[in-house]
Length: 271
Image 1 (cartoon, rainbow, N blue to C red):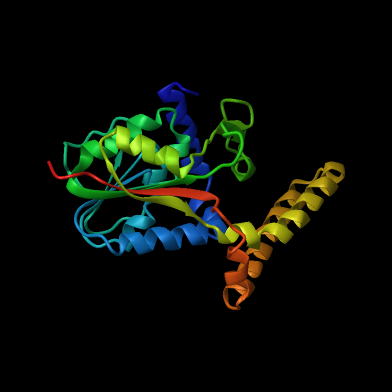
Image 2 (cartoon, rainbow, N blue to C red):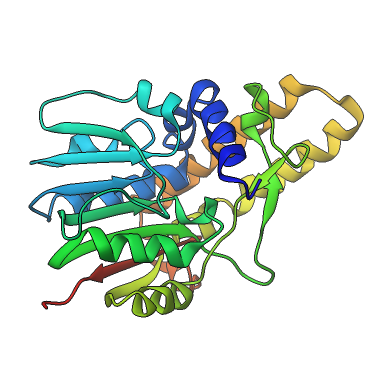
């Protein structure tokens, strides 16, 4: 899978078959992440590049010139069109834009799919104007860093991987992101974690999910597996909403040190 052609073929299959935006952004994790990214976007100005745009959802929350790039041509073929919105097939590790072409860069949930993370940070530095800012998000992790993981819901849509039913999907700690940024010449404005609410909201639903998976070892039903996963997502949202609109969330977050997602906001210094 480290071969770029094989990687592109995989994400073309994903883009053609898997409705990622509909699946991810109906979950608690997806909704919290979307809110965080949109809040950042709405405070920005200038020409924006989104690396790993998929179908361009975030671009339509931004005013001004917007360019979205993705390795998957099939995803871009289904992207939302609009005035001042442009799309191109491009490799995040070797962007084809001239130096200093953009005021802002968004790179959300892409780094974990790349084999050469330092090259992505170098690309961000290259395309940013002096004084320009970038936001990058990626999964956080504890313990052993993940590498090749199960296809999960993608397999239900007929997506196949190059490592059996697995694909490359890693994670980064905030400090690791900061180190990559600094090596690329970028200044760290802020780095941390988000989606802390998932840690408390998903506890009881996760126990139910595990019970359902245990039962399905005997049932071996794909329909039950999907129903069990949907139940987990609905219960997580319910627990979050109950806590969010009461005082329970304030108390629960006191016991949460880190969120399940890492982020970094970076700036290219004035030359």
